Length: 135
Image 1 (cartoon, rainbow, N blue to C red):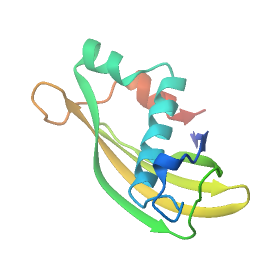
Image 2: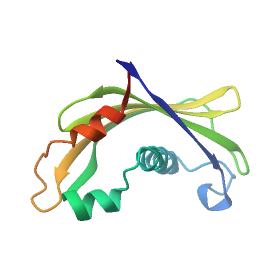
Image 3: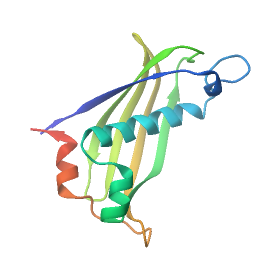
Image 4: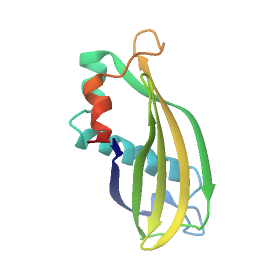
């Protein structure tokens, strides 16, 4: 099966930056999170729906990030996501942040599926896992 890629656009606002109008380093993690959330939504699954109906939540278990170049106020960025590995109760994403043809950030993010009541690992719905792949 072929891995699917998702892209999401974001504009850098003043609130995202430090006093030099450069994106504050922790805010890149917010951009990555929002892109994963929008990807999930584009697949027909909202985090609120999963919580209420399935008692399922995704949590970040680990992040490896490489800061290459800074983003600045008013930049339009493209956040790219693709799955590296889809397990039974976890997903590893490869994500990048681009400004036009410049790679600014690259990251690997491991997310686990947990039962929202017990916070113990829970199997991802098969229908969702299948959507992270393209036949």
